Image 1: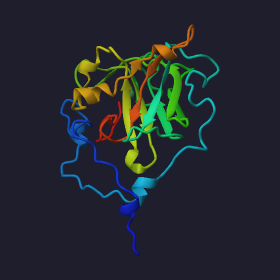
Image 2: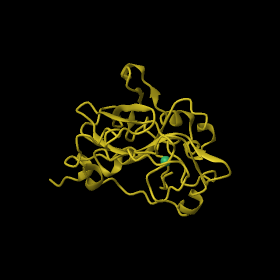
Image 3: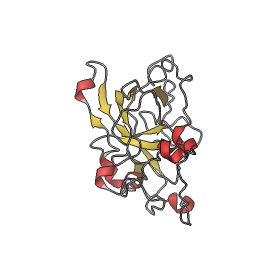
Length: 245
Ligand SMILES: [Fe+2]
C-alpha cells in the first residue's frame, strides 16, 4: 500500500498570530528596505523540512559555553550565568540541540569591523559562545553582561542590553534567531526591535528572569531564559525579515 510522508511526518503548526514581528515595521527603519512586497508562498512541510538537518554535535569544544575563559585574561564586566530550557511546541524538552549566542562586550562594543562605536574593545572578550542542551533540554552559558549601545535607526537611538541567540532545533522548521533582554531595562520601551513583537505576552517571553537560585556566591548573578521552538508559547523571532543589531 502506498504511504505518504504526511501520514508519518506531520508538519509543525504555523506561527500563531501576535507572536512574531511583522515583516514591515516602520519604526525599525531597516525593514522598509527588506520587507517582502508580495504575499508569501507557504510551502508544505515535507520530510526534508521536518527531519533535518542537525548541526554541531562534533564541533563543540569544552569551553565554548564559557565566554569568560576564551582568552588568557578575564574580560571586564559583570560576570553572569545565562541558562534555561529549550522546549518544543508541546512543552517537551529538546535534548542535545545546538544553542549559539553572540553579544557586545560590557562597554557595548562588538568585536566586528562594522561596529565603529567609540567604546573600547576588550582583548579578553570575543563575545561568541555555543553549547548543546543536555538530556533534559537544559543549556547554560557563563558570560559578561553586555552594555547598551547606540545605533543609527533614529536620533538618539540606543539598543537595550541584549544577547543574540540562534537555535536550529531538530529541523529546518524549528530554526530560531532571537534576542534575549534583561528585566527592568528602561530602554526596552524605546526599542523598535523589541516593540516590533506585536503582543505584550510575546514580548515578555524575550525578557530573561533574574534567577536567584542559580547565582553563585562571590562569583556571578544568574538569568533564566527558557526558549520554545514553535507553538503557542513560541519565543518570538527578532525579525523575520532578517538583519541583526
Ligand atoms: Fe546586537
